[in-house]
Image 1 (cartoon, rainbow, N blue to C red):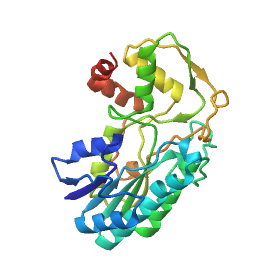
Image 2: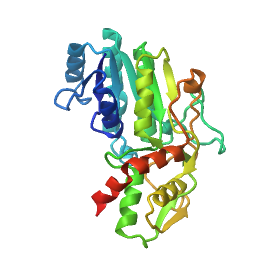
Image 3: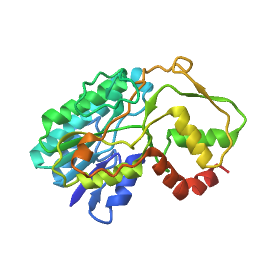
Image 4: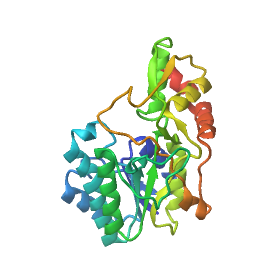
Length: 291
């Protein structure tokens, strides 16, 4: 199978490449070959490849910057998927497009989860641009899966857990406020990559929720991770109101993987189980980089 992975050098893209490169023909276009800021360049590259599947891991994910860089966010998060959908429709290619929990407003009471069929109402420009991307894929390409995921972490690139680790190692006594009233599911990008592998040839179409089982707050997640890493810290729980940001974030973005479960192909386990495995595999290396 020939697979194009867009955003191959990000957290999820890196894990997808590592998982698939020995089993398939994997193409990883650079920005000189494919760039969502250049529609013609993008379509020309894709039309030459005749791929079986395109996996779109690329996105403008700086949630707060999206508030001031709306045009750029819209181009990458909405127009880019539109170009991919157009090419996939013309070439008979399956499109696996990664989206976000931030398409929801978070008004459900915890522990109620959001289903794939629930109404969307994004609070931020990031969420709005990602929702526009979803709509462009839904309307532009027959063979697609739109994967809403959340709170990704990995050993590659910047993410919440690695930031918490770096700060704790730098100064374990420094009090650091971490939000304790936003709920979601920490999701290991490697597990999501494994799920994507199962969806390459699946008949599943449309929107699919793809996050770890269980949920926590950001504060609870950080504490659990650092304790598993055996790193002392002085994290302090705070409210969203005490930690204002340019972009509004949903208080509840817990997703239910109902489509995956309905087809009995879910790879996801409880978030703590994945964190345990992640620490076992990468903990020593992560600490070594900070010494």
